Each structure stands twice: as structure tokens, then as C-alpha cells.
Length: 341
Image (cartoon, rainbow, N blue to C red; front, side):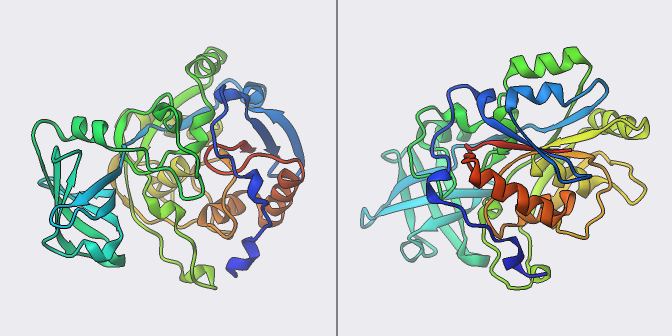
């Protein structure tokens, strides 16, 4: 299986640069897994395609304002730091640009010294371990100084931080939003609950590896980045009960999907707990838990496009994507949605 099998041609102008005013007004492409048929609707129509008893699984991670703009203390050179993974004692694994200015021992000042970072060492893929010192509470300092780490294909400045956050975001730790969830409002979720749709939550902190291109020709040689997930016991019970009773388990986003598939055993039982997952889902994978998926449109040749191809079949997905391009859907993080059912 080659990476080029997952290529499609996307005109630059179809990459959504700004979120819509109303979260639910984005378009919705419905793709039937069984016959590959396609319907075009709007996201607020999702309630007509969900039914009583469906278990909708959300990823309640919260994006942290992980992009910090600072200056090297001795030279005043500008340095950008992206927080990737939290270690103990205020040490973070980070992505630093330009890296050559951030050798071990270098000190970086953010917000006129409100936050100081010292580079400890260079680790895999050129990432830096940085120890931070500050007065007060780190999250509050970060909230004041940090910016939302928008994906590289979004060039517009985000006017409202909350629009790169789901309305149900709860546990801080993501470097990117679980974007399928951006289409939901509290009102829509209340409507679904009133219909008898059950809502369950899992947590997966999305890493920037999500945007990392696949650089090998053979899909099977690609190594996935690891991401931290957590599932509470009562949420696992809720999802297992739905599965046992033959009700649909519908994942909101590839992150919820990867969490569920990582924590489900070969007998189809989802286990509560937390850990790191490097699960890589591509065609040929046999899904153990999810029955349907709400998702956005993904980058050509990306691991996420491979995941949705595993669920719906590569030909069906590529056909749906080409149709979405022809219909001028909006793509990627702030773009339109797809319901694979």
C-alpha cells in the first residue's frame, strides 16, 4: 500500500482559513459505508441521521495556548517555542524555531521575563527539553502569554481563542483541537440528548504529530507519534453497554476513534484507564468498537485519510473527497464535516 494511493488534488482556496459564525452551519457530507452513496446536508441536519440509543463519543480534551513567542536572553534573538509534551518539574518537550539558537544552556524570556525557559537537552527529531521558571500558576501564565497553536495551513490570525476549542473541552493538554467536535453547540447536544442519544466522553491529548506528513513510500513503514489518552470507568461502562445492546457507537473525530480502538480488547470490551497510544489505522484494519464516525476532511496522504479509508473503503473515500472538492466544500480544521455511517 503506497502513500500515493491516498493523494487527491485540493485547490488552495478550499482550505478554510476562518471558522464560520455559527458552528452548526457548516456543510455535512453523508457517506454510506455499505454502498458508498453520498448526500449533501448541513451539520445541523445531523440530528436527522442519529437515533435514540446511539452512543456519541466526544473527546473532551482542551487545547492549551501552546505557542510562545520569546527572545533569547543574551542576544535578544526572536525564538518561537511550541509546547508538545509535559514532563515533571516544569519541564516540557518542545518544538523550537529556529533550533540553532536554542542549544542546551540557552535561556529564553517570554512576556518581559514573566516566564523564563532554559534549554536542557536536544531529544529525538530535534525537539528540545525546556525547564520553565515563573511566579504563580503555570496555566495562568501560559494563558496570558501563549497563543493557540493553529495548524501550519491556517495563515489567518484567530480572532476568538474559543473557536479553536470545542464547547465541551475540559481537560487541558492538547496542542491541536479535535476538530470534528468544533461543529457542535451546547444547544445541539441538548437536542440530541432530548432525542435519547447518549453522550460519552473520552480524553486524548492531540499532539502536533497529527500534522506530520508521511515521509515513507510504503504506508506500513510509517511510525506514528504517541499521544496520551484517558477513559473513566463510568464512561467505559456506558460505551460497553451500548455495544452489548447492539446500539451504534459513533465516534466524534479520529481522536475519539483512536482512543476507543486503542483501549478495546480483541473481545470488543473497552477498558477504562490511561496510557499512551501509537495506534495506526489504515485499510485492512478491523474496527473493534466504532460503528460510525463524524469527522472533518483530512490532508492528502495523511494518516487520518488512511483511517477513514479503513472505515469506509479507500475507493468510497477518494470518491467522496473528489465530490467534496467539486462541490467546493471547506477543508481541514475550520472546514466542513463528513458523517461516515
